[in-house]
Length: 500
Image 1 (spheres, helix red, strand yellow):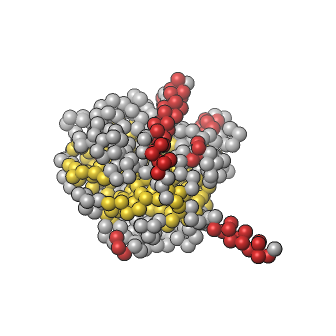
Image 2: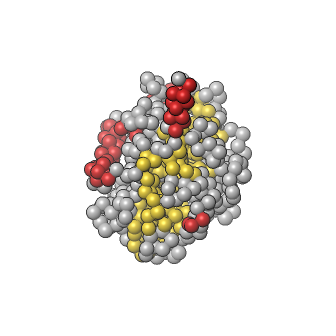
Image 3: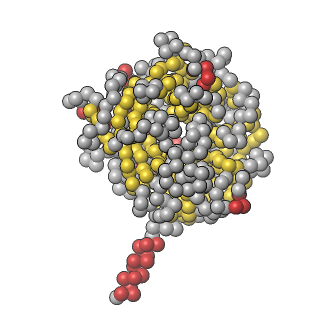
């Protein structure tokens, strides 16, 4: 009996590890390589958003700006007493400012991506994705958004707009046909009088325009500032020669972006993080590595030689429904990463069958044989979307659950995830708070966030309402100042997506 019990205990312990598996080629051909799953997700999003449009919920002018600081007290931040839609659930995060998309110069609203830039003299700016372009704000020392102007969409309005920083530039892609990739110089914002915000011109004010996409649309853009390369990922159509894979974009001269080609070898890439490799796998030291989130796999590429890039490994995992996005724990010593799956809650597959988002933990100490070692399950019913790791914290935009902060600093010592905990949150979508499970599995609320500012202010972009500026309590400075373990943590400049 004791022997049988010991075997059972060992089996349970082992169940927390070894969840990685080979890609299921038959399932992949049916759901992923064909684009069926991605099309179904986009259709479900369109359906949700059309219902919101029909109900008038995308009229962001309905949401009044909140100019005063609203502290989180006993689990709520009450901006308008007695108004449930302005009573935000929270933990150790205060609201400093809210401005609607209309207040931020948009006629269409419908927020998406966002990214920040810090000027050489320390001023902090955000580019805010909206259906009709990108809005620009400065975050003041008091945490207030100062609207400076906007760059209109290059072709037609569409909600999907992704933004990343490259040095002093914003790189802006879109799912709109013929949009191409805009390259905008953020230093143009430095001398604008806020009393006279500027609507910039695509003809006169762009530094560059990348026109090398198959039909001018891309799902996402990725930047590796260290190597002067950007990557378009998910560029339709899938039957083009690049198959929606990594398209290499040389940004050495931002006024003349060019491409030497692409890597189509694993087909469609939904998102990626590309870095110069620093870590324990000595075979790849100094190589340029892309961690690709490829619908049903974590696919790791060596893209050092753009004319001869290769796949190092391609690994699926238990619960794979739609591998969406992820981030390494430490860019300066790449041993682990965290990843989100955007559809496992909808598919109701373990470990997300109950509709509570799962953060997947990967051991990448061997790039050729990554291991899916553990998970963290959120306590709030919702869908996870985007996350970025800074100095031992994972900053997550989880749709209707809003902005969540996980302490992931324990992962190098315990990669099962048992030591991971949620330390702060701000729920920007109170509309679902009174549902039976306290949240909905749907594409509503927060799309993106930017938490890399030295000031500690965090910008959160929402689909329906607009932009929030929030901050963790007792946080006079930002992150990246040596907290936690790991080599070289806290380095970087904060403008290209790394801690300063």
